[in-house]
Length: 306
Image 1 (tube, rainbow, N blue to C red):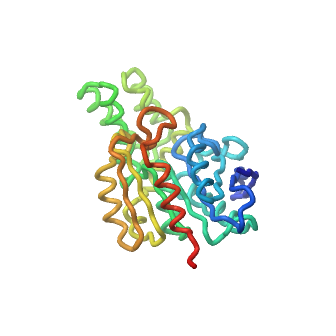
Image 2: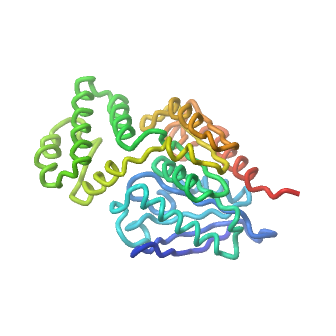
Image 3: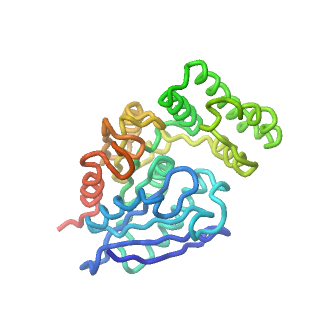
């Protein structure tokens, strides 16, 4: 497997990444860009991307990923950019990749995990990549996903129904404050500080004013997945894990499939025992067949006719 570094200018930020590919391919190979989920993350996603990268390379792809702003070698701060700005970063990197001579610029797809699944939806609807794969990409809004993940994480942790009700009421108030654009000092005094003594406080944190502004951006952006899914025309694969506590998998699969009305090559798969990362028994232990599905499905979409 070969490897090369790249950097892309986006606004006043430098996005640094790497691209790995097959050794001595007979022609410029197709490519796939991997997109991380929420939070700080470098191009390897703390090792999560390694088996996924290797699978795509084994199927003949060059595989690219980049550090989020402020992570790894990228400049800036990832907390300054909500979904639409992140999607614009992805489009900038896709454009740069398409101009390279060592990959086929007409055959570049995207794969996105969790929040990166939202990005896969947006990019599929706006940039027409060769294909898009959404891995645990929610079919619901940011607010709804926050509430679902908060509730089911607490329930899995064994919290009482009373505690869960109080926690969800708190999160509703935080969302209301974000929609209003309340300043951090007010939110800190009225909502965040009083909640620090609650047994569920560790599951939802806002560390500082930058964190709060990031929350405000996400909530006020009011991203609608269904609206974007309805615009997707490229081949699209949506994958969910039935044991996911952060994203409603079964309803998400149904809603995603129903929304892909303009796509004539749509596939929706649920791995019943998979978690949020489609793993079953811990880190890097993927559900049986998952990695094969990624490679085989994507390769079929970029295979040249004749």
